[in-house]
Image 1 (cartoon, helix red, strand yellow):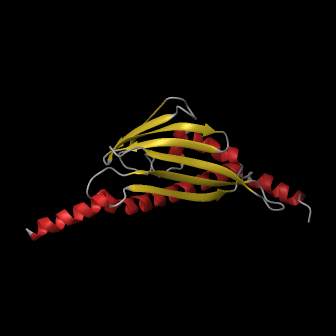
Image 2 (tube, helix red, strand yellow):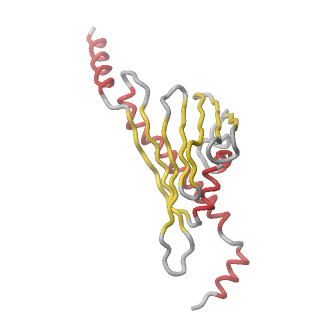
Image 3 (cartoon, helix red, strand yellow):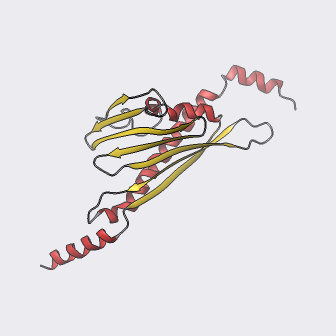
Length: 190
């Protein structure tokens, strides 16, 4: 009887806790915004840098639909942990990609990847600040209130890892080949 009372109290407390979440991750990429935008505006390109790609998640199957890039581009997936879908709802060239995500019966998540130029110092190249943010609410139920902070922290960790991969990918494509870089450095005034 005592265990049932304790479980009941925990369930009531969990039901009263907030189920909403709001988190973001950010990085600065040594490349112009258009180089970054191409990667985030084309959903199929996400498999090259996102933690949620068949290369990183065993058994993940992804299908693409709609437009190739921008508003209307979509993907759906399934894997042993659950099915989901993602679709772009807003796309502003070199500035923003907003999308909705639905996973395994959870309510829709509102997300965006915002790009802004970073003021460059003398002799520096273009840099872009990338901010990836998401907000939403976990499903109803007596225990999701306890889970909310852990969900946000876990997702933020995934976003951080994905942004680091995006940074490495874009910077590797944006830097000139070593022979060109050596010629540019040789011509630079002292």
